[in-house]
Image 1 (spheres, rainbow, N blue to C red):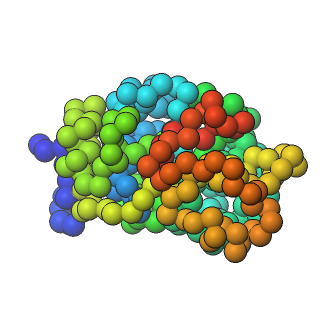
Image 2 (tube, rainbow, N blue to C red):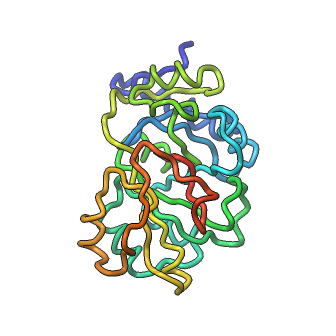
Length: 243
């Protein structure tokens, strides 16, 4: 059976989602559409599955993937401290293209790579992604492309790049947005600073400023939407090039 399932066809949607859930439970990889670009997903709490995701993309542990969650209600379960300003941003932009880096709950039994105790979280604004997340719980998700290649905007393009390393491809049609904006809120949570933009994507700095005002630190060097922040270049590492 073909690994790509057209989610616009009801029978393929049902089969694809069932097989995707099973694949995640077995520690395999799934490609799914999001509101930004296609993402390759693994069980966030399965270290072997996360390692498989990084290997499929040609990445190492220095570029840990972000974690997609089904709703803002999951935020407190994964982050150790959530400032009010972060809740305001989540209310304004989730579901949507904003990835927020916070300190992870120290009790979490996962290994996403060299995160230095942080986690990058996002609620995607896409029905297929949200349906899968509702069934599986948090997923480690990075853009469905080989490192250094353009992000996949179709399931077929993701298949061309990732091939048989992925068990199931959920085809949600073409997506056409820039990657998410990545912000680092660990300084605010720790009381040592404000919120920094690490990569400006679909959510502009001006839009963030409208919500949190002077808690947004002045820009120094912001990476473009097609660039991936490097863990070594930030005091707290973001999660790869994200989605």
